[in-house]
Image 1 (cartoon, helix red, strand yellow):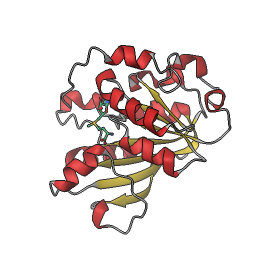
Image 2 (cartoon, protein in one colour):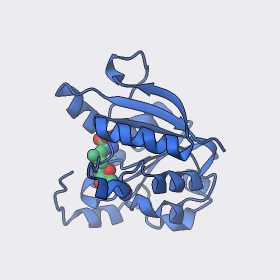
Image 3 (cartoon, helix red, strand yellow):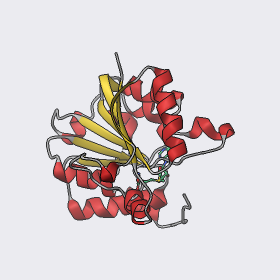
Image 4 (cartoon, protein in one colour):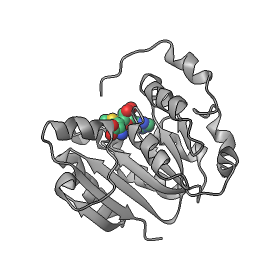
Length: 213
Ligand code: SAM
């Protein structure tokens, strides 16, 4: 995605450590201290401008959520949403997902959401896909046994590559739709990209996979 430089974003992020956790490595293995409860924790990797994770947190107050986004100029919009919504069960991290194990310990996370992840269609860039085996290992290392990944995309190529990656890793397929918006799946919460692409007529692919451990 194209990222616009916003020089003021960093300063605004630093002004709101209660929403964008400033030193996430300090909470490894003890995220319940941040939320002040023992509710399950779901994370979205590549949260973008935060529409999905904010709505999920509003709809499901008994689950804690963390939205993870690499770019400060993008997460700033998620921060503005969160300031407005003031949800006790949602936090944001402005970090790179390759470092997830610096911030989360085994069993910290119950579920991972990947929504409209960058497709990286070229073979030489395959390791950057958030469904590449190295990322599947990272998610496994921070999730409870039998944790799940819920994945949506409009990109057929990424979806196919990801299904192969999930299968080769030994994940179990729990749910699949090759046309989510025409399926009977209920309670779908749309992401920004999902709204944009479905308005243009693209079909949305969705699956849920589960670690076997
Ligand atoms: N999930 C949002 C949606 O569906 O509207 C945003 C989708 S956008 C195509 C993908 C987002 O993932 C971008 O904001 C990008 O910066 C973020 N991203 C990609 N790789 C990442 C990584 N390694 N760590 C954190 N965020 C990442």
